[in-house]
Length: 477
Ligand code: 6PG
Image (cartoon, rainbow, N blue to C red):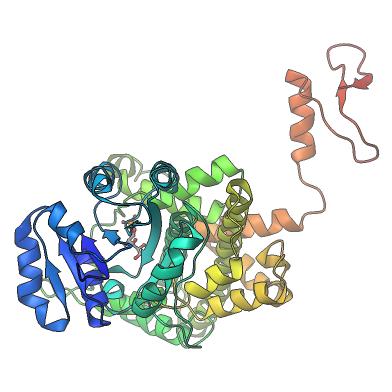
């Protein structure tokens, strides 16, 4: 047994991760359900490092140094359970199974619990960065026991992306499902970022009157400022791409129905359970859902409403500047909501997650990597108990500056009939937090009226109920 690590499941992510370990000097045992893939990997990339190709589960496990470290890169759900069921009986106490897929954190908690009883460390590790990242340096979010991180951590630090300050983009997020939870919220924020960028694009197109190539240039300019991020960069690339078959902008020939594999939906489901408002992420998930209901959209084409009138010249340029403000302010809100959700889950599940560290590992390698994340790390470093990102003076000041333009953009979108659920929801969240009084008092009154659900008062402690059906006196609830 010579391999320091093994990878089973050699589809593109698994294969690239195995190559990344090998390129960094580790001997990597490789295994796949169909052995042809294993042979292909070694034939094509064997020269990159030391691979130990194996065909059976027994051979794979026997190739690993103890404690054994097995990385599982198969589809989330039943396929992951099947692989665990196959390998766990072959392992000894102290060995580790590392699940690098996009597993649901509740599955990870269950698996960790079951395997812990057998002395096996189960590490649910979120890995972001797509194929490219897996090969050249992803952002890695491992959960599981602190003990497992002791020997696994340094290996992950070798293969991960490195942030500008030289820190590897990996941290032990917390026990059991903490890593997969944080990866899930990463994906939720990814959805929100993409939706906000999409809304900015549509406004620039319909109200700004710009073509896709011009909008690509606007995004490139934004990418040199505070919005500097991977998603803005690739957006400019996608927008400037021309379809070879038709000569038309690529974005105009792609069917406008956004698909999803489920992590955004899971984020919202979890937020509902935790009672945390993640309206930006939810609107992004719903916007994809709306886009996919083609029959409903087709049947709704006749619905009345304005047709946007495109601005021109200087007015369009001024509008583009306002859209940048709206995008930035809305982005601050979606990160505020996402970090709130992580904080709430950390408290609920006893994970003790360091939010500044989470922002730090997202600075490189992952899909939402952005200059902006340095600011979030700095905010949590300055005040680890920061109750909300919006409580950070720097972010609050920036939003205060952006808000007039943000409101103007949402107002224009509403007047012109351009759907901007992300911008609007973010603004509504911001105004809800600012509001001295919310209509929730009225909601409580209604609940008390029809269901005797009781209410609290602003002026004294206690629980109260009004006899709505009787003489309307107030009694103790
Ligand atoms: C990443 C991505 C990755 C995957 C998304 C796509 O961090 O590398 O998030 O995990 O590309 O899950 O999600 P949808 O298919 O749901 O858009």
